[in-house]
Length: 141
Image (cartoon, rainbow, N blue to C red):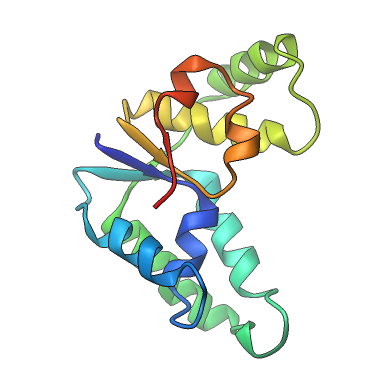
């Protein structure tokens, strides 16, 4: 797998007036389903983000589902088993990871499971805490 996409990259793909739209869309379009992935949890994160954006950027549940369906069609969806979840949390607790960064750790584990060469995220501060296997793959679009 060549690329793994974090929610921070996927959401701007769907907003033409987002300041990061062009770079995120270019990265997204660069790969096909056999080359790119996202975490199963990212589908829920994208849905939640799109349906709770402020003001005119908020979209309906029906529109959000169209976008989530697009992700499902264009990306390989990677999920962790219950054991993989526990081991990831355990390993990151030992690294001192706290708070919401654990969600990024779970996504990073999905990327490693997919053998992604690159992890695309704008949330680099959190991902940089997750060890050298993650940091060497971390990219911004």
